[in-house]
Amino acid sequence: MTPPTSPAPPAVALPPVIAVRFDDATAARLAAALAAVRGMTSDAPSPADLQTAVKDALGGLDASTKLRFRSSTNVEDSTEFSGAGLYDSFSGCLGDDLDADSDGPSHCDGAEAKERGVFQAIKKVYASFFNRNAFLERLRRQVDESKVGMGLLVHYSFPDAQEMANGVAIYKRDTYSRTATLVTQLGALSVANPEGGALPEIASVYAYDQIVTTSVTQESTLVPIGGRVMTWDSDYTALFSMIEKVEKRWEQATGRKQKSLDLEYKRVDPGMLRIKQVREVPDATAEGEIDTYLIGGVAEWCTFQGEYGEVYGTHRVKARATIQVRSGFVKDFENGAWMESTKLEFEIDGQARTDERQLSGKPDVTWTRRTDYVTVPIQTRPEWDVV
Image (tube, rainbow, N blue to C red; front, side, top):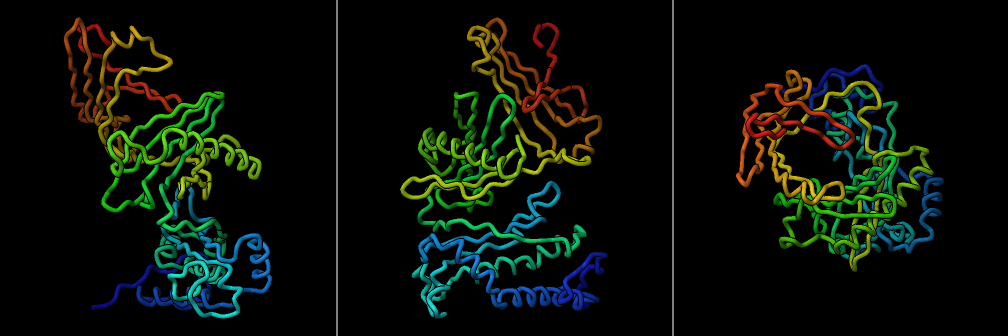
């Protein structure tokens, strides 16, 4: 069999060490070329000025402090290019670079037989820029390699045994209020790709002026029913306060205000909260028109009971609505028909009523959206006198 060949060379600049191997290259030869580039990067000596700058920056830390070095490129975390999982992260400590030898064990991890210096970790992160999947994804998107750059994010390394919880927060400030959605997983288990399909806890924090309220919309499957991943609700409000301080510093550093922020956090033994990174959530409405993919499913709502409700009105209008939503690109929904079926359960004169409809893609239910609120008017049977 003839080995599969790689795509034709794109009309973009490629590093010469790869370009010379690209013409008529098989997938195996391309992988070998990328491996060669990664090896060149990892084996190259660290420039003296870089070593001085890094040592000065880390000089205030204990030399055995274990640090995590992560990629930060201009081709990830954007509206059309997430870059998730394409690049690698590595850990190291300055002590392994200052001990004047290359013999193990590591100063930052006695269980490691080999040394794990910070300069080797830095080079290995940069080398991951030429990971096979990363290169092919940039190639597929016709990214000009000469315009791509990588920086590094550095934070304390948290051993799994010390992690009591970890999570991702989405924070948003508008004119009148601030909100944060906290998605938290127990221990060091991944939030995005947990083993065994364990569901994370999802909590919401809402702040108006100095009033802060908390609620849980999804419980973790790793804690007892009714339990919480972190201490309720002191950890959640404390984390929210930390996020707000980070947001203010973000505004000072970037000059960008009222942007949605994505933050990663941890709760480490004996219960300390740590925010390890922050980045802006890409604004899909910033430029051009981007088609949205709607992930379908079943959503259920019931009569709202809160500060905007009225106790007797809430009691009289006992209702529950269930809507089945289609999956697909919005542009493919004829006339915006994105609902499959609706079910409305309510009570009139002490009798339970149910109105079910199979919409079959027909746009006979309209909707309007204002900020985060969607209004869906459903006309029931005339004799029920309910809209």
